[in-house]
Figure (tube, rainbow, N blue to C red):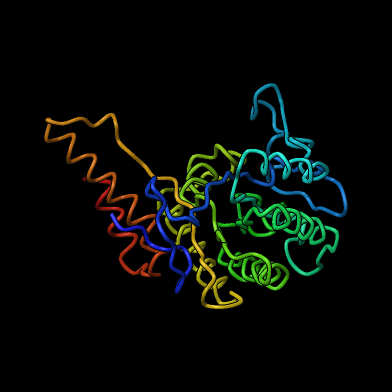
Length: 287
């Protein structure tokens, strides 16, 4: 299998192990998982800051107030990454650390933190890979209009993406727009496992949420600093190990599950085609 180069126009020679010389072995985190400092330097509340405080939501009431204290220990963390031999580090930006109210006022201390983190990574020859959204919606936007359930999220997400592109576009080569949108919409809005139970909506509403974040993806891309910057969205793939051949009905069910995943999660964000989304997904789910 021929390996495609990550950067257009760039040719990478293969090493003996089959990987290009510039293949990026790395690790990834989410801001809420590691940063801590949830009330420091002007950061606003995110939905996760409040969700973890609901009774019974997390193991023994644990939260991310301190987490791995990456906000204060990032230099030490980057040195450890270097010792491990990492070539890339994918991190997410906390939306509420940059825009405490979700829009409008920009918190300079938040930008300064990510500038320092990116500079530290580059100094240690570690490629920064920036995730724009890893599930940390500002609480103000959830309270105001229901977050990803509303089309109003498009303008706010676009504004947020523009701020990041303008701030870090000259330093960061690799961008991830959304982390696992199929997961944060299903667990957040369809099953209410990542939000208050009052946010449960129907499968059709969940599909519409997917359409809205797809438009946010497309609008956000308008602000890329140049056409050569690789951009992606991280997906959580779905397998069906419980469906085992040779039973034909199991193969059929697995295929229908795959189609439902494609229609609901891949089609809107890959090509913007949402005209047949609802009817196609509905047919797949009933098959």
